[in-house]
Length: 299
Image 1 (tube, rainbow, N blue to C red):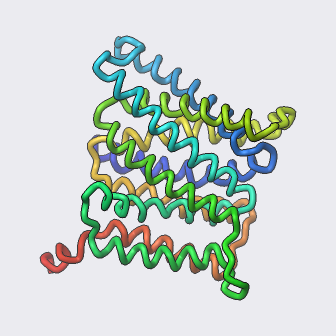
Image 2 (spheres, rainbow, N blue to C red):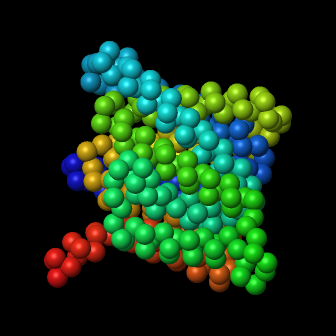
């Protein structure tokens, strides 16, 4: 059962995230990013509060967490929520002018950035990671830049790349706090913080037209309940006590699901973009391979 948790939950989360790129792209046509993320985060918070209450009833436990966990839950929720708010805003803004499949593969760059960020935590990265960086850079070139045109990166692509950097920090923060607090409560707290931050930014920078909410009902419910409430909770639960390399590799499947979802919805990628997608997928896999010295010892 524990093995299924560590394997199936990340795959399910990847599927939900990958297909959610289409819903987010539709939502971006009607609502500005901060407003969209405020509503979806509020929906996720309410959904997870209901789950926490239900679990507490079934387990006959108090609704509030134990006192020894409250400080870590508060700090973890603030850190995770802040990272998620920035990452989600960049992603939603970028999706306004970027194909869902393309955005999915660029976002997957966090798979390469996570082990690189480990260098600042005094963790040495194996050679396979640096090989993955080179391949990913080439993949980003073909995804973001038309080789037949002048060297130019679309602003929306830069936003998605920034989103990948923020998601890198989000994963590292989750890895730290998931060993200390309940995963569902941590997920609920992070979306409450995300809703507050997104709401404040919305008041300062946007003037959303709330009359379009009926047209955004399905995208908001899908991203709020499934992509936010369910998938991110599955990620937190799966990361607890699991091999982060294996979990990260499984989560990276969201890129493949994003492309498939975009194609089903009628999107078309050019030959260069398909090449970029392929190189990004190779980089994602390469980043998770065992170090070369261990491979030689087995041989």
